[in-house]
Image (cartoon, rainbow, N blue to C red; front, top):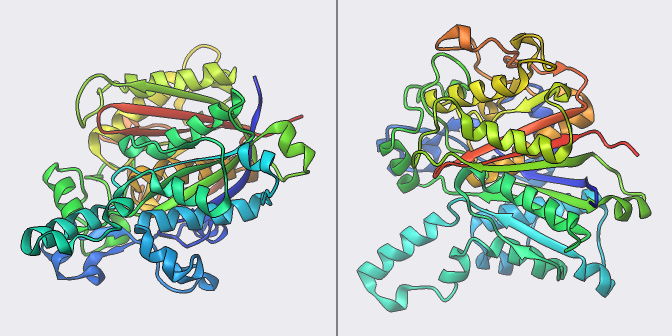
Length: 431
């Protein structure tokens, strides 16, 4: 089987526009979660009034304005999630130094970028306009701006990539499915290079209302936004919605070596599973998550004892965090594994950026790649008292402050509504 390595990283997140600034703020325990009051009065009537918002401003300041990344004509054609995707892809390709012009190279380069919800704002505003004023109020760009696969489409069009063009949309597992699927396209010879990730921008009153009605969101921290997302903490009470994009450049190993590309890490294994249980809730024992992680390790040919870090999906919900915690402990405790739970290192970076829905898995895969590359465990913010019950939460959750630790192999998890699960195994690259 062909080996797959990571040669480029790009991200637009609530911490910063750009992966270097994002990573620096993450490791420094920064938070990108703030009040939604700046978004308009419609947000002030909602029960959850906090979100992980991409900071606005110039690219030089590590902030977002579309004109720094794409021409005005292209900006008008794209939904915001697609704009985030094309910016993250641009950064990742620049980082990888991959700018092919030969036909063979363009045909061997593909794109898979997904989104969980896509352009809800466009769907809402156009529906209202059509209802009130009819056909002529519908933009000819309505459908292209609505379609989730247009993020991948725009990247392919911009760079002329003629390899596989694919878009996952599997709720909050989307970003990790995109990266994992892309790695397999390379393994099986469908491409030599893949631009892969997820993007989301649906911080809209309707989206927040929907998640709030499902009782999924944090509502008790509106006056203290940075404290709202608290994975593994006993006071966790729902996730914080976020926006952004994460994109990686994956490459077949010999292809990367032939051009002396910088290699961040190797994608060793990818596992998928289904809870087959409930529309929104996981099984309490986390069996679906366990199966995905077990499959990832099987394909990686890595023992559980070799896993130094797990970047948990943990969204700060009571049921979800507890189920994943059980699954990880089941995987990493036992004969020939970790001697006790305190040796298990896991954290959730959602404490810093919130839950980026369809972009979450891709952004968190990047954080895991950098953890492996830099031997640093990203922190879980707002973790004051792990538990409920505390005796079940006895691992090292990297509370509040990053930790230096050798990370030779790691797992990153993503789970979504409908019971869809994915786990990716990332390891240091060795010849």
